Image (tube, rainbow, N blue to C red; front, side, top):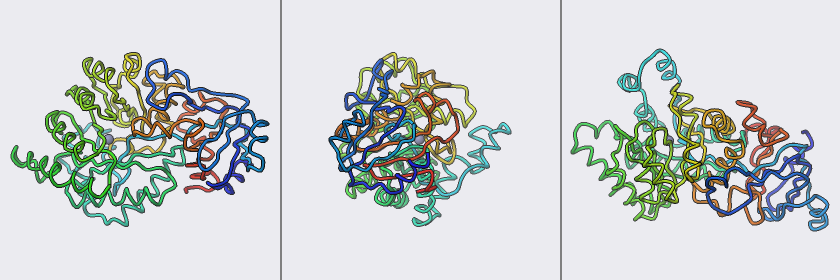
Amino acid sequence: MTSADDEVLAAGGDETLIFANATQIVTCAGPPRARRGAEMADAAAEHGVAVAVLGGLVAAVAPLADLRRTYGGAREIDCGGGVLMPGLVDSHTHGVFGRTRSDEQELRAAGLDYMEIARRGGGIHASVRDLRATDEETLFALARERLARLAAFGTTTIEVKSGYGLSLDDELKMLRVIDRLRRELPTRIVPTFLGAHEIPLEYRTSAITRSAYVETVVNDMIPMVAKNGLARFADVFCDTGVYTVEESRTILSAARRAGLLLKLHADELTSSGGAELAASLAATSADHLGAVSEAGIKALAQSSTVATLLPGTMLFLGKSTRAPARQLIESGVPVALATDFNPGTSPTPNLPLILTLGVSQLHMSASEAVIAATVNGAAALGIADHVGQIAPGFAADLALFDVRDLRDVPYWYGDNRCVATFVGGKPCHSSDLGLC
Ligand SMILES: [Zn+2]
Protein backbone atom coordinates (compact mmCIF):
# COMPACT_ATOMS: atom_id res chain seq x y z
CA MET A 1 0.00 0.00 0.00
CA THR A 2 2.90 2.29 -0.82
CA SER A 3 0.90 4.64 -3.00
CA ALA A 4 -1.57 5.26 -0.17
CA ASP A 5 1.25 6.10 2.20
CA ASP A 6 2.82 8.52 -0.30
CA GLU A 7 -0.53 10.26 -0.78
CA VAL A 8 -1.06 10.41 2.97
CA LEU A 9 2.19 12.30 3.46
CA ALA A 10 1.12 15.02 1.07
CA ALA A 11 -2.56 15.35 2.01
CA GLY A 12 -3.78 18.48 3.78
CA GLY A 13 -6.88 19.42 5.80
CA ASP A 14 -8.13 22.24 3.61
CA GLU A 15 -7.76 20.37 0.36
CA THR A 16 -10.59 18.60 -1.40
CA LEU A 17 -9.77 14.91 -1.15
CA ILE A 18 -11.17 11.78 -2.71
CA PHE A 19 -10.46 8.47 -0.96
CA ALA A 20 -10.47 6.00 -3.85
CA ASN A 21 -9.90 2.27 -4.38
CA ALA A 22 -11.05 0.93 -1.02
CA THR A 23 -12.35 -2.63 -1.28
CA GLN A 24 -14.93 -1.72 1.33
CA ILE A 25 -16.05 1.50 2.95
CA VAL A 26 -17.62 0.91 6.35
CA THR A 27 -19.70 4.07 6.73
CA CYS A 28 -21.66 3.35 9.95
CA ALA A 29 -24.09 5.85 8.37
CA GLY A 30 -27.41 6.34 10.11
CA PRO A 31 -29.01 8.40 12.84
CA PRO A 32 -26.54 10.77 14.61
CA ARG A 33 -27.00 9.19 18.03
CA ALA A 34 -26.25 6.00 19.97
CA ARG A 35 -27.40 2.81 18.20
CA ARG A 36 -29.44 0.27 20.12
CA GLY A 37 -30.43 -3.37 19.63
CA ALA A 38 -30.72 -4.38 15.97
CA GLU A 39 -29.39 -0.97 14.91
CA MET A 40 -25.95 -2.15 16.05
CA ALA A 41 -26.00 -5.14 13.69
CA ASP A 42 -25.41 -3.15 10.51
CA ALA A 43 -22.21 -1.12 10.13
CA ALA A 44 -23.27 -0.19 6.56
CA ALA A 45 -20.33 -1.64 4.60
CA GLU A 46 -20.40 -0.46 1.00
CA HIS A 47 -18.55 -1.62 -2.11
CA GLY A 48 -17.88 0.32 -5.31
CA VAL A 49 -17.88 3.75 -3.68
CA ALA A 50 -15.35 6.42 -2.76
CA VAL A 51 -15.41 9.27 -0.23
CA ALA A 52 -15.08 12.98 -0.98
CA VAL A 53 -13.81 15.27 1.79
CA LEU A 54 -14.19 19.05 1.66
CA GLY A 55 -13.12 21.51 4.34
CA GLY A 56 -12.43 18.74 6.82
CA LEU A 57 -15.90 17.24 6.47
CA VAL A 58 -17.23 14.28 4.54
CA ALA A 59 -18.93 15.76 1.47
CA ALA A 60 -20.19 12.63 -0.31
CA VAL A 61 -19.99 8.84 -0.49
CA ALA A 62 -20.59 7.83 -4.12
CA PRO A 63 -19.06 5.97 -7.08
CA LEU A 64 -15.59 7.30 -7.93
CA ALA A 65 -16.60 8.50 -11.40
CA ASP A 66 -19.40 10.63 -9.91
CA LEU A 67 -17.05 12.19 -7.35
CA ARG A 68 -14.44 12.95 -10.01
CA ARG A 69 -17.11 14.80 -11.99
CA THR A 70 -18.37 16.78 -9.00
CA TYR A 71 -14.99 17.47 -7.37
CA GLY A 72 -12.68 18.08 -10.36
CA GLY A 73 -9.13 18.81 -9.25
CA ALA A 74 -9.49 16.98 -5.94
CA ARG A 75 -6.42 15.15 -4.66
CA GLU A 76 -7.04 11.41 -4.81
CA ILE A 77 -5.79 9.19 -2.02
CA ASP A 78 -5.34 5.59 -3.11
CA CYS A 79 -6.70 3.30 -0.39
CA GLY A 80 -4.84 0.40 -2.01
CA GLY A 81 -7.73 -2.04 -1.77
CA GLY A 82 -8.00 -1.66 2.01
CA VAL A 83 -11.01 -0.99 4.23
CA LEU A 84 -11.83 2.63 5.09
CA MET A 85 -13.75 3.15 8.34
CA PRO A 86 -14.68 6.01 10.62
CA GLY A 87 -11.69 6.70 12.88
CA LEU A 88 -12.07 4.68 16.08
CA VAL A 89 -13.31 6.43 19.21
CA ASP A 90 -11.68 5.34 22.48
CA SER A 91 -14.14 6.75 25.00
CA HIS A 92 -12.44 5.60 28.23
CA THR A 93 -8.73 6.04 28.99
CA HIS A 94 -6.47 7.12 31.83
CA GLY A 95 -3.82 8.18 29.34
CA VAL A 96 -1.80 10.54 31.54
CA PHE A 97 0.45 8.81 34.07
CA GLY A 98 4.07 8.57 35.09
CA ARG A 99 5.72 5.23 35.56
CA THR A 100 4.30 1.91 34.46
CA ARG A 101 3.17 -0.80 36.93
CA SER A 102 4.56 -3.90 35.23
CA ASP A 103 5.77 -5.17 38.60
CA GLU A 104 2.16 -5.65 39.72
CA GLN A 105 1.44 -7.96 36.80
CA GLU A 106 4.04 -10.41 38.08
CA LEU A 107 2.74 -10.14 41.63
CA ARG A 108 -0.79 -10.96 40.38
CA ALA A 109 0.54 -13.90 38.40
CA ALA A 110 2.21 -15.15 41.59
CA GLY A 111 -1.21 -15.16 43.26
CA LEU A 112 -1.20 -11.89 45.22
CA ASP A 113 -4.61 -10.25 45.41
CA TYR A 114 -5.49 -6.58 44.99
CA MET A 115 -5.41 -5.87 48.74
CA GLU A 116 -1.96 -7.38 49.18
CA ILE A 117 -0.61 -5.47 46.18
CA ALA A 118 -2.07 -2.26 47.63
CA ARG A 119 -0.49 -3.10 51.02
CA ARG A 120 2.87 -3.31 49.28
CA GLY A 121 2.37 0.17 47.87
CA GLY A 122 0.86 -0.76 44.49
CA GLY A 123 -2.50 -0.08 42.87
CA ILE A 124 -4.01 3.33 42.05
CA HIS A 125 -2.22 4.89 45.04
CA ALA A 126 1.14 4.02 43.46
CA SER A 127 0.15 6.02 40.37
CA VAL A 128 -1.07 8.86 42.61
CA ARG A 129 2.26 9.04 44.47
CA ASP A 130 4.12 8.97 41.19
CA LEU A 131 1.91 11.57 39.45
CA ARG A 132 2.29 14.00 42.31
CA ALA A 133 6.09 13.70 42.12
CA THR A 134 6.30 14.12 38.33
CA ASP A 135 6.46 17.52 36.65
CA GLU A 136 4.01 18.68 34.02
CA GLU A 137 6.50 18.68 31.16
CA THR A 138 7.49 15.05 31.82
CA LEU A 139 3.85 13.97 32.09
CA PHE A 140 3.08 15.70 28.80
CA ALA A 141 6.01 14.07 26.99
CA LEU A 142 5.05 10.61 28.28
CA ALA A 143 1.38 11.04 27.37
CA ARG A 144 2.12 12.45 23.92
CA GLU A 145 4.17 9.39 23.02
CA ARG A 146 1.62 6.98 24.52
CA LEU A 147 -1.41 8.58 22.86
CA ALA A 148 0.43 8.50 19.53
CA ARG A 149 0.57 4.73 19.98
CA LEU A 150 -3.21 4.63 20.44
CA ALA A 151 -3.59 6.68 17.26
CA ALA A 152 -1.34 4.25 15.38
CA PHE A 153 -3.98 1.52 15.82
CA GLY A 154 -6.72 3.56 14.10
CA THR A 155 -8.01 5.68 16.98
CA THR A 156 -8.79 9.31 16.12
CA THR A 157 -10.71 10.39 19.26
CA ILE A 158 -9.43 9.67 22.77
CA GLU A 159 -11.12 10.51 26.05
CA VAL A 160 -8.52 11.13 28.77
CA LYS A 161 -9.32 11.26 32.49
CA SER A 162 -7.58 12.91 35.39
CA GLY A 163 -7.72 10.96 38.66
CA TYR A 164 -4.13 10.24 39.69
CA GLY A 165 -3.77 13.63 41.37
CA LEU A 166 -6.52 13.45 44.02
CA SER A 167 -5.73 16.94 45.34
CA LEU A 168 -6.82 20.27 43.90
CA ASP A 169 -3.34 21.18 42.65
CA ASP A 170 -2.50 17.75 41.28
CA GLU A 171 -5.86 17.27 39.54
CA LEU A 172 -5.45 20.70 37.92
CA LYS A 173 -1.92 19.72 36.91
CA MET A 174 -3.22 16.59 35.17
CA LEU A 175 -6.04 18.48 33.47
CA ARG A 176 -3.58 21.12 32.19
CA VAL A 177 -1.53 18.30 30.66
CA ILE A 178 -4.68 16.88 29.03
CA ASP A 179 -5.61 20.35 27.76
CA ARG A 180 -2.17 20.76 26.19
CA LEU A 181 -2.51 17.33 24.54
CA ARG A 182 -5.89 18.46 23.18
CA ARG A 183 -4.34 21.58 21.68
CA GLU A 184 -1.12 20.07 20.34
CA LEU A 185 -1.95 16.54 19.16
CA PRO A 186 -3.66 15.85 15.82
CA THR A 187 -5.97 13.39 17.62
CA ARG A 188 -9.30 14.60 19.06
CA ILE A 189 -8.97 14.62 22.86
CA VAL A 190 -11.97 14.77 25.22
CA PRO A 191 -11.04 15.69 28.84
CA THR A 192 -12.74 14.17 31.90
CA PHE A 193 -12.32 15.21 35.53
CA LEU A 194 -12.02 12.11 37.77
CA GLY A 195 -11.07 13.63 41.12
CA ALA A 196 -13.19 10.87 42.68
CA HIS A 197 -11.10 8.00 41.29
CA GLU A 198 -10.16 6.81 44.77
CA ILE A 199 -10.21 8.12 48.32
CA PRO A 200 -6.68 9.53 48.77
CA LEU A 201 -4.70 7.79 51.51
CA GLU A 202 -4.45 10.95 53.61
CA TYR A 203 -8.28 11.09 53.80
CA ARG A 204 -8.91 7.40 54.50
CA THR A 205 -8.31 7.55 58.22
CA SER A 206 -11.95 8.10 59.28
CA ALA A 207 -15.50 8.72 58.05
CA ILE A 208 -15.01 12.41 58.81
CA THR A 209 -11.90 12.78 56.65
CA ARG A 210 -13.55 10.69 53.95
CA SER A 211 -16.49 13.07 53.75
CA ALA A 212 -14.05 15.99 53.88
CA TYR A 213 -12.54 14.73 50.62
CA VAL A 214 -15.97 14.49 48.97
CA GLU A 215 -16.54 18.10 50.09
CA THR A 216 -13.20 19.13 48.57
CA VAL A 217 -14.17 17.53 45.27
CA VAL A 218 -17.58 19.27 45.32
CA ASN A 219 -16.62 22.67 46.73
CA ASP A 220 -13.05 23.21 45.50
CA MET A 221 -12.23 21.00 42.54
CA ILE A 222 -15.41 20.98 40.45
CA PRO A 223 -15.91 24.77 40.48
CA MET A 224 -12.24 25.35 39.57
CA VAL A 225 -12.28 22.73 36.80
CA ALA A 226 -15.50 24.14 35.34
CA LYS A 227 -14.38 27.77 35.65
CA ASN A 228 -11.19 27.05 33.73
CA GLY A 229 -12.92 24.94 31.07
CA LEU A 230 -10.58 22.03 31.80
CA ALA A 231 -13.09 19.17 31.42
CA ARG A 232 -16.16 18.26 29.41
CA PHE A 233 -17.11 15.36 31.72
CA ALA A 234 -16.97 14.50 35.39
CA ASP A 235 -16.60 10.86 36.39
CA VAL A 236 -16.67 8.91 39.69
CA PHE A 237 -15.45 5.40 40.56
CA CYS A 238 -18.59 4.01 42.18
CA ASP A 239 -18.03 0.54 43.62
CA THR A 240 -17.65 -1.39 46.86
CA GLY A 241 -14.60 -0.03 48.67
CA VAL A 242 -14.43 3.11 46.57
CA TYR A 243 -17.28 5.69 46.35
CA THR A 244 -20.78 4.77 47.49
CA VAL A 245 -23.85 5.43 45.39
CA GLU A 246 -24.77 8.37 47.63
CA GLU A 247 -21.30 9.93 47.49
CA SER A 248 -21.28 9.44 43.72
CA ARG A 249 -24.69 11.09 43.43
CA THR A 250 -23.50 14.08 45.50
CA ILE A 251 -20.39 14.56 43.36
CA LEU A 252 -22.08 14.08 40.00
CA SER A 253 -25.01 16.35 40.94
CA ALA A 254 -22.52 19.11 41.77
CA ALA A 255 -20.72 18.48 38.48
CA ARG A 256 -23.97 18.81 36.56
CA ARG A 257 -24.77 22.09 38.32
CA ALA A 258 -21.34 23.32 37.21
CA GLY A 259 -22.17 22.49 33.59
CA LEU A 260 -20.22 19.25 33.19
CA LEU A 261 -21.59 16.13 31.49
CA LEU A 262 -21.54 12.92 33.51
CA LYS A 263 -19.84 9.53 33.38
CA LEU A 264 -19.60 6.79 35.97
CA HIS A 265 -17.27 3.85 36.64
CA ALA A 266 -20.14 1.52 37.52
CA ASP A 267 -20.45 -2.07 38.75
CA GLU A 268 -16.93 -3.11 37.75
CA LEU A 269 -16.34 -5.49 40.63
CA THR A 270 -19.71 -5.82 42.40
CA SER A 271 -23.36 -4.99 41.72
CA SER A 272 -23.43 -1.82 43.76
CA GLY A 273 -26.20 0.15 42.06
CA GLY A 274 -23.87 2.13 39.80
CA ALA A 275 -25.77 1.42 36.57
CA GLU A 276 -29.05 2.45 38.22
CA LEU A 277 -27.45 5.68 39.45
CA ALA A 278 -26.00 6.48 36.01
CA ALA A 279 -29.41 5.92 34.40
CA SER A 280 -31.24 8.01 37.00
CA LEU A 281 -28.83 10.93 36.43
CA ALA A 282 -29.03 10.52 32.63
CA ALA A 283 -25.23 10.16 32.64
CA THR A 284 -23.77 10.10 29.14
CA SER A 285 -22.14 6.73 29.88
CA ALA A 286 -21.85 4.02 32.52
CA ASP A 287 -18.53 2.23 32.17
CA HIS A 288 -17.21 -1.29 33.03
CA LEU A 289 -20.47 -3.06 34.09
CA GLY A 290 -18.70 -6.40 34.63
CA ALA A 291 -21.08 -7.08 37.52
CA VAL A 292 -24.17 -5.11 36.44
CA SER A 293 -27.44 -6.43 37.92
CA GLU A 294 -30.67 -7.26 36.11
CA ALA A 295 -32.18 -4.10 37.60
CA GLY A 296 -29.18 -2.13 36.33
CA ILE A 297 -29.62 -3.44 32.79
CA LYS A 298 -33.31 -2.57 32.91
CA ALA A 299 -32.57 0.94 34.15
CA LEU A 300 -29.99 1.51 31.41
CA ALA A 301 -32.40 0.26 28.73
CA GLN A 302 -34.91 2.89 29.78
CA SER A 303 -32.34 5.69 29.83
CA SER A 304 -30.16 7.60 27.37
CA THR A 305 -26.96 6.25 28.98
CA VAL A 306 -24.41 4.36 26.84
CA ALA A 307 -22.92 1.19 28.39
CA THR A 308 -19.16 1.36 27.78
CA LEU A 309 -17.57 -2.08 28.13
CA LEU A 310 -13.84 -2.56 28.80
CA PRO A 311 -13.03 -6.24 28.22
CA GLY A 312 -9.28 -5.58 28.02
CA THR A 313 -9.27 -4.93 31.76
CA MET A 314 -10.80 -8.31 32.53
CA LEU A 315 -8.34 -10.01 30.18
CA PHE A 316 -5.29 -8.30 31.66
CA LEU A 317 -6.36 -9.00 35.23
CA GLY A 318 -6.98 -12.65 34.35
CA LYS A 319 -10.60 -12.50 35.45
CA SER A 320 -13.20 -14.82 34.03
CA THR A 321 -16.17 -12.49 34.56
CA ARG A 322 -17.49 -10.68 31.51
CA ALA A 323 -19.83 -7.76 31.04
CA PRO A 324 -23.14 -9.15 29.67
CA ALA A 325 -22.86 -7.50 26.26
CA ARG A 326 -25.46 -9.71 24.56
CA GLN A 327 -28.01 -9.15 27.26
CA LEU A 328 -27.35 -5.41 27.20
CA ILE A 329 -27.71 -5.21 23.41
CA GLU A 330 -30.81 -7.40 23.36
CA SER A 331 -32.34 -5.29 26.13
CA GLY A 332 -31.88 -2.21 23.95
CA VAL A 333 -28.92 -0.67 25.76
CA PRO A 334 -26.44 1.07 23.41
CA VAL A 335 -23.02 -0.56 23.92
CA ALA A 336 -19.60 1.06 23.35
CA LEU A 337 -16.16 -0.59 23.59
CA ALA A 338 -13.02 1.16 24.85
CA THR A 339 -9.49 0.26 25.97
CA ASP A 340 -9.50 1.63 29.57
CA PHE A 341 -5.84 2.39 28.72
CA ASN A 342 -4.14 2.80 32.13
CA PRO A 343 -0.93 1.69 33.86
CA GLY A 344 -2.47 -0.77 36.31
CA THR A 345 -5.24 -2.79 34.71
CA SER A 346 -5.21 -2.25 30.93
CA PRO A 347 -1.96 -0.98 29.43
CA THR A 348 -2.96 -1.63 25.81
CA PRO A 349 -3.11 1.08 23.15
CA ASN A 350 -4.80 -1.38 20.76
CA LEU A 351 -8.51 -0.63 20.29
CA PRO A 352 -8.88 -3.16 17.44
CA LEU A 353 -7.76 -5.80 19.98
CA ILE A 354 -10.66 -4.70 22.17
CA LEU A 355 -12.94 -5.30 19.18
CA THR A 356 -11.49 -8.83 19.05
CA LEU A 357 -12.43 -9.29 22.71
CA GLY A 358 -15.87 -7.87 21.96
CA VAL A 359 -16.41 -10.63 19.41
CA SER A 360 -14.54 -13.53 21.07
CA GLN A 361 -15.33 -12.86 24.73
CA LEU A 362 -18.52 -10.79 24.71
CA HIS A 363 -20.19 -12.56 21.76
CA MET A 364 -20.76 -9.44 19.71
CA SER A 365 -20.80 -9.55 15.91
CA ALA A 366 -18.01 -7.76 14.03
CA SER A 367 -20.48 -5.07 12.94
CA GLU A 368 -21.68 -4.58 16.52
CA ALA A 369 -18.08 -4.25 17.68
CA VAL A 370 -17.33 -1.68 14.97
CA ILE A 371 -20.45 0.37 15.82
CA ALA A 372 -19.44 0.12 19.50
CA ALA A 373 -16.05 1.73 18.77
CA THR A 374 -17.28 4.39 16.34
CA VAL A 375 -20.84 5.74 16.57
CA ASN A 376 -21.49 4.50 20.10
CA GLY A 377 -18.04 5.56 21.30
CA ALA A 378 -18.86 9.04 19.97
CA ALA A 379 -22.25 8.90 21.71
CA ALA A 380 -20.45 8.01 24.96
CA LEU A 381 -18.60 11.33 24.53
CA GLY A 382 -21.66 13.35 23.46
CA ILE A 383 -20.25 13.96 19.97
CA ALA A 384 -22.26 11.49 17.86
CA ASP A 385 -23.83 14.38 15.96
CA HIS A 386 -20.56 15.07 14.11
CA VAL A 387 -18.14 12.17 14.77
CA GLY A 388 -18.34 8.41 14.21
CA GLN A 389 -19.75 8.01 10.70
CA ILE A 390 -18.59 8.44 7.12
CA ALA A 391 -21.60 10.45 6.04
CA PRO A 392 -22.09 13.93 4.55
CA GLY A 393 -21.56 16.67 7.14
CA PHE A 394 -19.61 14.48 9.56
CA ALA A 395 -16.00 15.22 10.47
CA ALA A 396 -13.63 13.47 8.07
CA ASP A 397 -12.12 11.32 10.83
CA LEU A 398 -11.05 8.22 8.95
CA ALA A 399 -9.00 5.06 9.54
CA LEU A 400 -7.61 2.99 6.68
CA PHE A 401 -6.88 -0.68 7.41
CA ASP A 402 -4.87 -3.09 5.27
CA VAL A 403 -7.63 -5.72 5.24
CA ARG A 404 -10.38 -6.63 2.77
CA ASP A 405 -13.46 -6.89 4.98
CA LEU A 406 -14.56 -5.28 8.25
CA ARG A 407 -14.57 -8.73 9.90
CA ASP A 408 -10.79 -8.86 9.34
CA VAL A 409 -10.30 -6.00 11.83
CA PRO A 410 -11.25 -8.06 14.92
CA TYR A 411 -9.97 -11.23 13.23
CA TRP A 412 -6.22 -10.37 13.01
CA TYR A 413 -6.03 -10.10 16.74
CA GLY A 414 -3.20 -8.14 18.24
CA ASP A 415 -1.89 -7.20 14.79
CA ASN A 416 -1.78 -3.60 13.67
CA ARG A 417 -3.41 -3.36 10.25
CA CYS A 418 -3.98 0.39 10.43
CA VAL A 419 -2.22 2.12 7.53
CA ALA A 420 -3.28 5.71 8.17
CA THR A 421 -5.71 7.91 10.05
CA PHE A 422 -7.14 11.35 9.32
CA VAL A 423 -8.76 13.80 11.70
CA GLY A 424 -10.91 16.47 10.07
CA GLY A 425 -9.33 15.47 6.74
CA LYS A 426 -5.79 16.06 8.04
CA PRO A 427 -3.32 13.16 8.31
CA CYS A 428 -3.00 12.11 11.94
CA HIS A 429 -1.00 8.93 11.68
CA SER A 430 0.59 7.01 8.85
CA SER A 431 2.44 3.71 9.16
CA ASP A 432 5.28 5.19 7.09
CA LEU A 433 5.62 8.15 9.41
CA GLY A 434 5.90 6.00 12.50
CA LEU A 435 4.49 7.85 15.49
CA CYS A 436 2.89 11.17 14.69
ZN1 LIG B 1 -11.36 3.72 34.14
